[in-house]
Image (tube, helix red, strand yellow):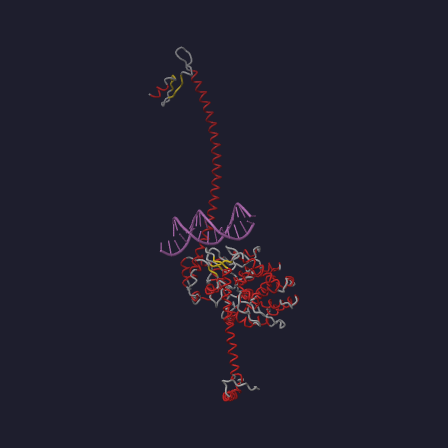
Length: 589
DNA sequence: TTGCCGTGTCATATA
DNA sequence: CATATATGACACGGC
């Protein structure tokens, strides 16, 4: 069975005999000879050392990535956010796009070989996975890896050609796979028919999110990252387009029917199926965590599809941006980032990134552990009520977002533009609804795991609000965010009311103005009438005066001259003929 | 490209 | 003093 091993200097013949004796004693127990083999153990030790070295190299690589990412970002002094250096991005984008074009074998035509119905079927079945129940929750707990980086390392170690430590450019395999997969999805969803499918997906998920919220439990598991890995494997060069199509359809149709809306989706088995789908495909490359998050979103119907559909991966044109330009949390939906620059800058490296830029996040240095609420007994119910907050793809349950923030400022990567959330489908009318539905504050709340809705935060009366707040333990960042959300929410309503009042006032003033104009016209007309009647009365009075005056005669029987005399009336009603020269003297009297 | 409009947000005053 | 409300000013996106 065993060939005689060359005795080492440290191993005397007595030692070898002793080993043989011990082995013979244990051989019935199934112990192999290698157990007693010093060389074997030494080899194992060396292997372990190599693994450790590799692990260290991975960590070093990770740090270098972050450094490179820092180099691509600049700190916005106003917002405290990291923003990409504008000039670099387009060039890099173009370059990487070209690289992708040459490296990715899937042509658009290939993807388009999938009929719309097939695509619809695939994605429809994918998202018909109902809200995961507790079974899936269990699955989550059991499948949950320790952390994304570790997962990533595991993947890397399983690779035939481990990624060497080095700079960004020295990790083509990982980045390429990421790009390939994202590209595949971009192309898949760039099919015009699938644009409207986005909306269907959204609606389906909306249904699951809002009608079954109470039954929703956490199902997010990074293991689902591998869900779409066939995309990166099937689309290898030696696969024809028809093979791609059929394989893909077969993959989904063979895997998904066993999953209904009430059954927990066994991601692990699902992935196993996929990974073993085509044994000819030897170059099975693991996905990065980042891509995995995208896939996780796709796979989990509990996931926030807003993030998904906001994801630029589905149109590949713009950056997903949960960026908060002026205040609050700046969250990059990098899980689905497809921009080469973005991918290169960090998201491709498999970390969900979180960015907090204003007062909300200024306290982020608080102990990460405190970021987790300590819910009351009814936490589950209260929690699931707004579960979508906690199912954000970038809210990892086993990694602390603050920690990630602290170590990976890359979260600031690639805000497409300063300002509000920008729909990935900039010209997609459907997304404006999503955008409207998920405000920035909601996104912030998701990031910080706020266990109740923004609506509650804003609209609850003070007492109820305080009562609700007392049920949880929040860290300072969360408290600040909640405070700001409430303030902003109330101010938003106040501003709306204010504007409405202002408009009402304007309308009212305009109405008053019209009324006054009408009144003025009316008064002017009335004044004209009065003037007319007044002039007529004056005429009549003059005629009457002259009639009376002409009847007056002096002692000679001569009429008085109207130039020398005038008729004047006293207060008592007596009328006198007064010489005009004496008129003044009479008045004086 | 420019201007207008609606909206969210902030700062500040006031209740 | 804390909170809510009101409002001017500003930024931003859409048209």
